[in-house]
Amino acid sequence: MVDHKSGPMIVDCLGSLFRSTSLPLEVFVVQNLPGDTVSLTATFPQVTTIRNSVPLGFSANHNQAIALGVAPYHLVLNDDTIIPEGVLDGLVAFADAHPRAGIIAPELVDLAGEVVPCERPARFPTLLSEVSRSIPPRWLPDGFRGYYPASVRSQPFQPDWVSGACLLLRRTALRDSGPLDAGYFLYYEEPDLCHRMRRAGWEVWYVPDVQVVHLSGQTVKRHMPREWNQTQFYFSRVRYFRQHHGLVTATLMRAGVLFVDAWRWMKWLVMWRFSRSDESYVRLRLATAALRRAIDMRT
Figure 1 (cartoon, rainbow, N blue to C red):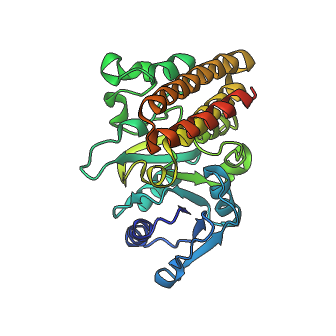
Figure 2: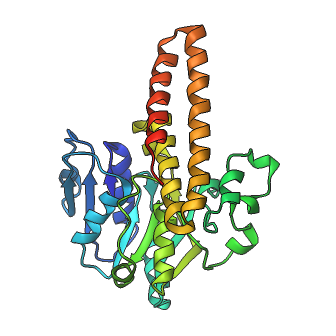
């Protein structure tokens, strides 16, 4: 688990984790933001904390904990989740019953018990699915975005990839596939890992009978400006397409990133010219930085 000065949220998450099971656990929390002085071990003495001197990305943070663990399974878990009773037992029981399962993911729901739309299992990204995600959902069926229909998700099945908010990973499978790719700071590390896991001969499973509550996006909203967050998304998207679809497709994707960032820069330039507000000035600076990074992006 990674702590981004999460305060009560990570305390609630850890509390629910320990209450949910009687299985023996080794728990690692990476404190990712320098200056984070919250002592989780005072409340949870069984937790081992890892302090970063500089902030790292999703993959690099979780790889630190994976390297220290010795248990046969490793749970990748967001700090903005709540673990109901029986979740870990259910995931481990499913993994034990399916010895070729390298990744097992639960269903992710909100506080009302509804499936989180953007975290449903999906097919591997393609140019069509990525373009479709930029179009309002009401205009296109979910199939264009790569999501599996509810009829398929009603029982355990093997999707192409699953969300990284909660993943049970088999340690022997990770040795074959390799760990999470630290070249992805944020986004697209899950489909990349699922690709490599499948190529190594392991299975990826989605188990809807096991549900985890995910307060989706809370960490990103608290600590990452929208423009920076979108830039990371686009960088990771281009990297993913370069690795798994080749240079031509990645170049087309990069052209799309440049277009979006240029349009956003023009929008905030015009708004600042007319309003001269502090908010539009800050947004313009962020958009300028994003555009520069997009121009420097390599495929």
